[in-house]
Amino acid sequence: MRDNAVPPMHLSGVHSARAKLESIQRPPGPDMNSVDRLTIDGPHGSIPIRIYRPHCAPATDAPALVWFHGGGMIMGTLDSFDRMAREISAGTGAVVVNVDYRLAPEFTFPVANDEAYAATEWVVAHAKNWGVSASRVAVGGDSAGGGLAAATSLRARNTAGPHLVQQILVYPGVERRQDRPSMRQFGDSPLLSAGDIDWMKALYLGDDPAADDEYGTPAKASDLSGLPPAIVVSAHGDPIRDGVEEYGRRLQDAHVPTAMIRYPGLAHGFLMHTATVPRARVAMAEICALASARFAATEVCGGLT
Image (cartoon, rainbow, N blue to C red; front, side, top):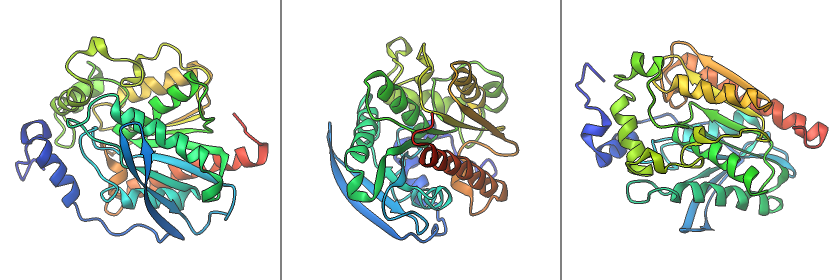
């Protein structure tokens, strides 16, 4: 990216960032038993979702993973994250429900958060119709989607909402930019810079950090106890690494069963590059294996927490 003088996203603008992400050519993901495209009712209008059922999933009482894609809250579609959804579904053995939430700056906080939570409620309410066990539903996401998964877990706990068996947080965006060692070391990354982080956070959350709450910025939550077991994934070369890992440690301190994994030699967004980066493929396999084990434990133990 540096060799080709690719400008940072905050300088090229929203439309350019979206176009670049959608233009990336990726090989197709694993074949699925079925892929269903539909829209569901949400608090801000209809929400497109895509439901992936892997060949290894049982016809009834399958685990389900509600997935929120990355993209800094400003970009990303069901198409650009189709390969990732397929890989996660095949790797975990779960029915993956990929959610096409509305993006900023056209739709600002709390729209995407509301839609993420509404989609999770919908999956639980319609579980039987899709051969899913309502008692084995999880949430997960990468980057901005990881932040939505963390917020959805908080909201479900706070409102006595859907019971979630786990949260899978892959380099999640849980805070605004902070002065941390990883930010100082990698804040000029061509993949994700400090300026990009400030810009994207402001587009969704607004310019005033004092107005943030724990749903828009999960790291602001004062109490993390009682949340679903977590998998928290970070990349060594990611400017937000230290904030991600602090959130994981806080989950552990709150007695939430939490597996924390830092991958060396990788940068933010690596889970999108399994086709070209061997270490990303290994990471995908390991993350999915952990998630699959958690789903299996809940099946055997009847709601292990």
